[in-house]
Length: 228
Image 1 (cartoon, rainbow, N blue to C red):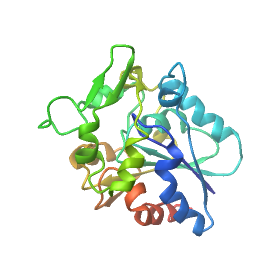
Image 2 (cartoon, one colour):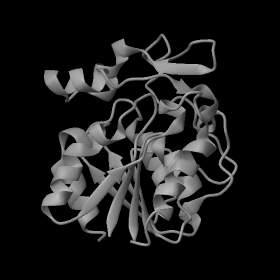
Image 3 (cartoon, rainbow, N blue to C red):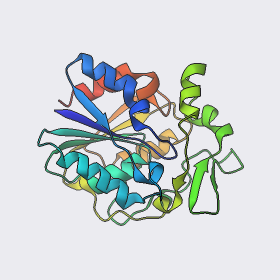
Image 4 (tube, rainbow, N blue to C red):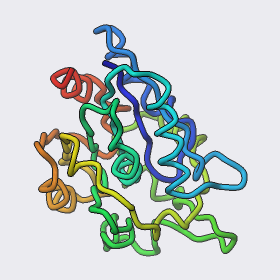
């Protein structure tokens, strides 16, 4: 069994974000890797379907069974890409969990409405990014200074088309799924997560903020190990 991680919106270098959890898993003999999403790292920027294709290419690379783990926007990607012979389970970490024909924009604002101006800003060139002043209070409130510096260095623009694109399939209708609700998340509110989690096969709730695989890798790894 291997684990394939898919990161969320507006960041690059997925391996950096997932490394703390990957290290814990490795100590227990579980291999993992992280996808590179064209919508965040390619030039020109890809879209949702390019992101899904990049994940499928990694799934195609081996017949070994896979836990496919998506964070936040990554839930859109694994929903589109995850109906694959290698995938044994989908894992959504404070993620969007769409049905076929739904777009991320259909879920409304992911962030608390009491935080104007908008957390995300469009640059008028087909890309958007998160406003850096909101990153720490909403997305990284439990990061120490060194970890936050590493995270801030990996913020990036993303093709804003991904937020309006609709999935063409819903892998969770065919593949067992687990939703990890992050109960201290200030970005995707817990009630929003719990509502989407009703579509999953099972739900696990952890007392963690938006990036538990960075700051509480022990808890995330423990959940993943139960699925192997």
